[in-house]
Length: 214
Ligand code: ADP
Ligand code: MG
Image (cartoon, rainbow, N blue to C red; front, side, top):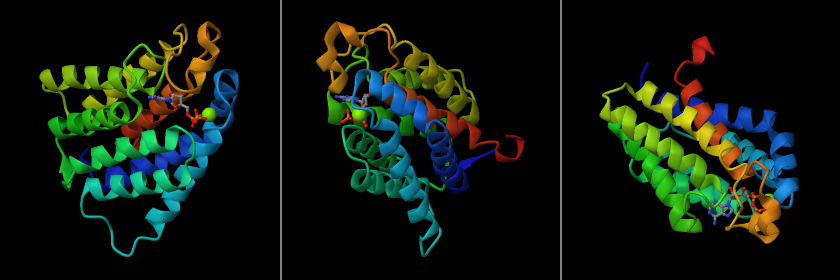
């Protein structure tokens, strides 16, 4: 199973499906420690991405072409903090994915660049109860998988598993960045919505590698 342009297209479509399925849950998470718009924001954004991909005149030649469509669409359709954060993540990831197919090292580079984009934009570090907690866990696990000479699919699987753990680990944290930080200590005890949606994005990436067995 290769991680190629067809995979990238399936990844984005699967992300849109998962975000739609979990929309209300993301809204509820954001209602607890934010303003309740995260699920709506992302659902609107990924629906728009799918419409854009469906309307392309020519099929994308490189993985990065797909990711660039995601980046520009999210930046123009998703408001709040998450639009620019995800937009920058996909834009950085696109820049290192000018390839028709990704090997394990290129999958890692994609994930690292996405994390760098989020950090460049939001200036959060791990432990501040943001999507950085999911992405940094994913990158750490992917790095180990590449070191262990695992396949591109296994690198994505490790990243997705770790992203989920990274998201769960935000529950006891006190938010020090973003809207949730206004709550101070009262932000503890809740899953961060952006970390939860990031775990969905990475789950979609691994599910996109095995479309016929899903
Ligand atoms: P808003 O907070 O503007 O309503 P969203 O609800 O769409 O935006 O997104 C909130 C999510 O954005 C948070 O759960 C968190 O994961 C993420 N976030 C907020 N600020 C930052 C930041 N500075 N760095 C990284 N992620 C952040
Ligand atoms: Mg919000």
